[in-house]
Image (cartoon, rainbow, N blue to C red; front, side):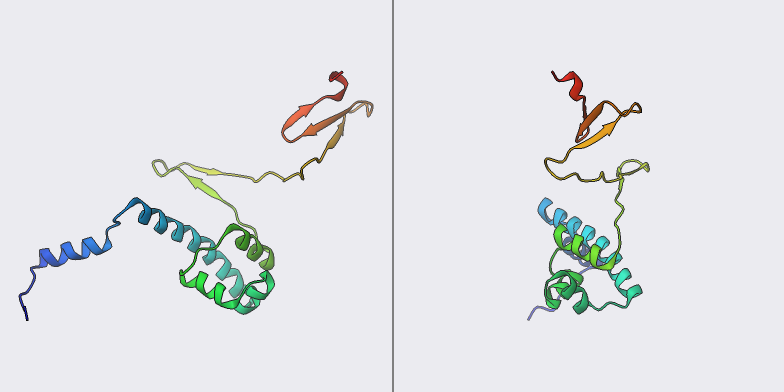
Length: 146
């Protein structure tokens, strides 16, 4: 049995090896977990405010209580469908804030209203005579299409 002691420098190096991120894939996995925990922390806060159990949340989004527990433990990552279901079940909204990691400038995004495929919106001018159809973000004047 070897009972040699390690120096404090060797111990520090061992800890650094354990705590260091060994690969890009590992770094991305940690980043994904961090993002998931950000969303789940807000969901947990809303659940506490509404006195909703994990079992009740699971039932309201059509999944098992064990899946919800796995999410909150960090064993699994939530997908966006389940996050959207949780958001709706709790009557909450998420606001996304983007920051460039090299500056302190913040950017906010207002999510556009989603229009179903094939949906047309007719906007009439003030003379109420000439309809103009709007396709997504592109304006299309039907009177000039001929």
